[in-house]
Length: 158
Image (cartoon, rainbow, N blue to C red; front, side, top):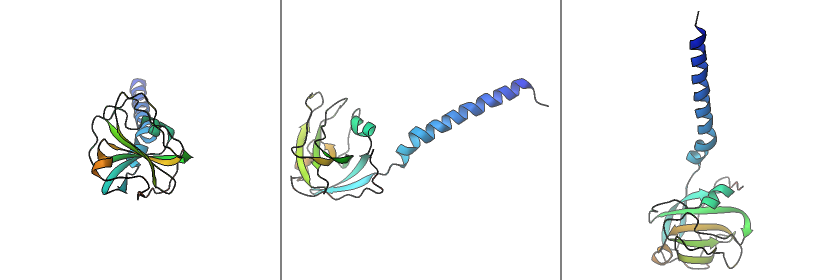
């Protein structure tokens, strides 16, 4: 026969483990399973993290200390719009590229600096926004009207 005290300790440990496991499944696992995608644009190929919901798009690259030359953030919006980008919590300068629903470049901002308080918007509606390290637009010869190539499986946007 077990003592009541050891049963209480067992229940507390089980509760803590259940809480940790639930937290992992709800908050961490979706980000681990979220696939990256490759983006071909200009003469560059970029490994892009996807931002497909309001929280991820609002965060953007905020807080990122360094972005590798072949890395990017690809924001996917639910529809075309004049989606503005701000430098909230940014620590590095970036180039920003807006693409329409056909993945054609419709607007570019180069060297968007941390601390810049302006909101930058595309000149025409866009569905996708790509954030790259500053200088990438020039170094990879990215121009308006060219088309990006990328695939997003099961494109579910919130």
